[in-house]
Amino acid sequence: MQLILKEDVTNLGYKDDIVTVKDGYGRNYLIPQGKAIIASTSAIKMLEENLRQRAHKLAKIKADMQELAAKLEGVSLTIGAKASSTGKVFGSVNNIQIAEALAKLGFEVDRKVIIIKEAVKELGSFKATLKLHKEVSVEIPFEVVAE
Image: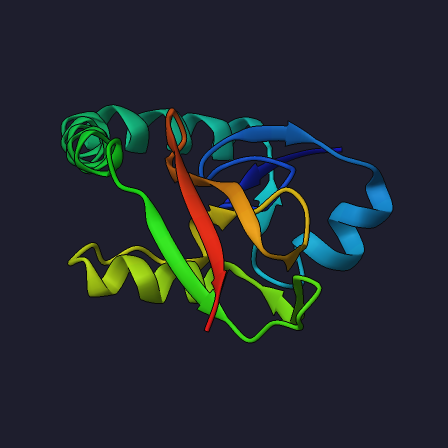
């Protein structure tokens, strides 16, 4: 089943992408949730026209995200967490804490675009990936220290 995504769907695609998914996933989840529509020929023509009209606006958004990525390139974060004497963190460090640390530095980044590959449950140095745009992502190193 071919669908046109109406919003970004993690591990599937970005808004206005045409994707192929299994019938059940499309019918039972994506379409009822309003995340996608069926990719009929008329819907594809409308999408192409809308993309053509929005091309300038999308280029500006991409340029803004590239500028933000350039500013974030040299940033390194230190996140304090409660930890045991052996170096294990009580709970874990997640994308919300990274977003708050970036906000303190003056960078307003949505927590949904921050991806941490493995759970951070101990003290040390790690990396988080920020997917700012379809084609723009930046890695930010962060260190977890005991409070």
